[in-house]
Length: 421
Length: 54
Image 1 (cartoon, chains in turn blue, green):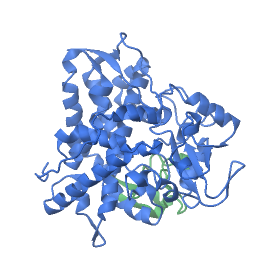
Image 2 (cartoon, chains in turn red, brown):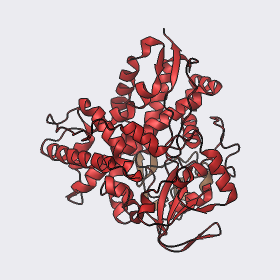
Image 3 (cartoon, chains in turn green, cyan):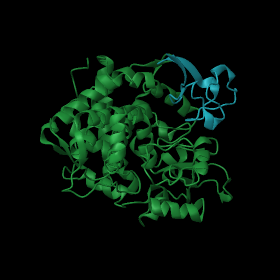
Image 4 (cartoon, chains in turn green, orange):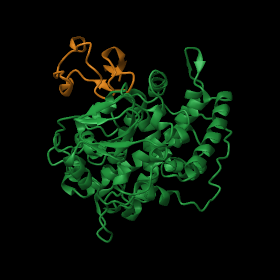
């Protein structure tokens, strides 16, 4: 792919010993299974005072610190109703304190009509017919290169050797970034949301990525390539280019949302199949099951268990009055495992019919822009694993993996064995 | 293959599958979907859809 030759240097954390991955674990917690508590709270009531994070620790979150009253909302119908009603439940008032502080002028922190305008422009670059072409050009080369490194060994640890690497490397390729800077990009990208728990490295990471992308945008305007930055930086809509702060906000968020959630979702997909060898074998034999398998994995372990909205008028939710000015925590983990919608909802079952649409990537005007890319990446990764890792199984010499955390869940390690041809 | 796609989120309407959860039976042609039907993924109106080549 043709990209501009010059590349600015991305600065690492001032404290180079800062362990972003350990900090992220503290952000998302080490809860082995939050779902029993989610089910219990949902059974007690659909709406509870307090934040979702307060169920798992006693530290105030960024919305507590901003002075909001918080409420948790459980259940598929309640969660989808909130996320679809952008007149009552808005984003800017709440997200300006969170992603607005790190990503800047992000579409997540916008409401209509500004949100509608910018979202549509970015979504154009991520429509199914566009990302469908990236499977061969971007995803497969990365997937195969990473797998080549451990194919000969007959064993691997799939988190650190594969799932934690491939979505980020796909993004570097899309953006035409220097692969040697990949590890720093990934550290900074994953640190950006740490301002949620008050760590200064969140803003530091966003600042450094912002300065970096500002330089890259200027370079790609002067000498465009065929990469996504060149495309968006030079795109004209109604005779105007996208504002730099909106572009920078988008690229900051893309590094995080596009890399981190796909890494977690692919890891959880593999855990689900490895813990259910009969289902792993079924999908290996019949690849038409892959789409259903991925949808079920995304339902079973939703990439992010909660989402927030600002309440801009007094509103009744399932009989509970939630006052204007509050923040509602929509518990997507509750929606996707609502026992009123899914029979035996905690069971992973690729053969189950979904009586309602799971909402792994949210629903409504802010539904994930990158959902089609995430599904494509997971599909290509799973196909490659099924094709190349024969007799894939968990390594009995290591503890069985399970996702941990109460927010964005992922296992720490997945040790596997397979036959070497 | 040409399909109707939501320009706000990329949801694709497949006539053979319809949108049963949204009250649209499998096999329903695009032209017969009511104007007040909304995209199941993002809630956009039918008017926000465009015909695209997939």
